[in-house]
Length: 266
Image 1 (cartoon, rainbow, N blue to C red):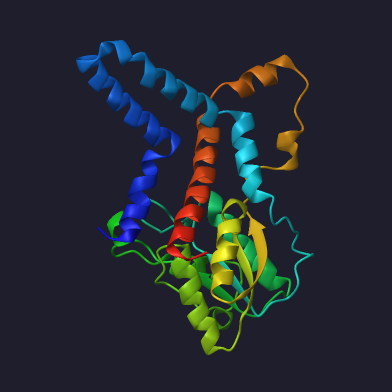
Image 2 (image 1 turned 60 degrees about the vertical axis):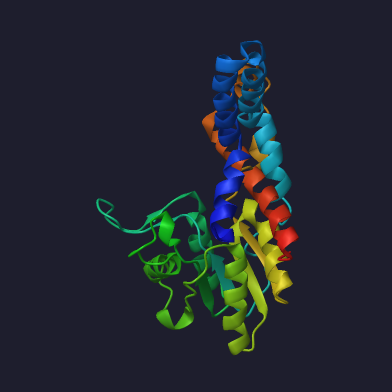
């Protein structure tokens, strides 16, 4: 099995949901063979769900990544290219009436905004689709992002697509090749704020001058302005699928940093 597949498969057992599933399987085995040990994996599962889906824990984890490169569009300097990383774009597959924009789709919107503000005259949308994850016979993420950029009024002459990337490392390597041909190396990097710390390091490893332009923030200042009432405090203590998902995203980034570091990509 290739690295790409393993990089998608193995971390699933380290994310809260996958780890709890694994512990429940262990519980069934213990129930059959060693019932006296059965409470242990069940208790651990409850703790994982409680911590992973907790409002306070989730927000702190996400904040530790997202708030590393805070900026506004006005603060950003000009660059030679705006690079938009793929993510959050769903192809126009029936019954969708058009390309759908998910949470991370803010990247395309923000990239278009930066272009219209005159931050660069070139946009590089980068991202392919993995065949064994349903990407066969579908437009690449770069193709779909380009269609949205047209919708926002960005001219075709300002766009160079990169459609062969399956992960952030591919994004960086393939983008660098495009920029080398144009004798450019100073970019505004647009991706989700939670994904930015890892992305910056990967792109800088390709000897590019990277100006982070994060968007798609999951945690804002309001999330740390706690309401002084027992109802909110009580509700925030209970696990919530939204915060469990955000915790998983943060863990994914930290695992990615470790793996990419071991691979020499950071």
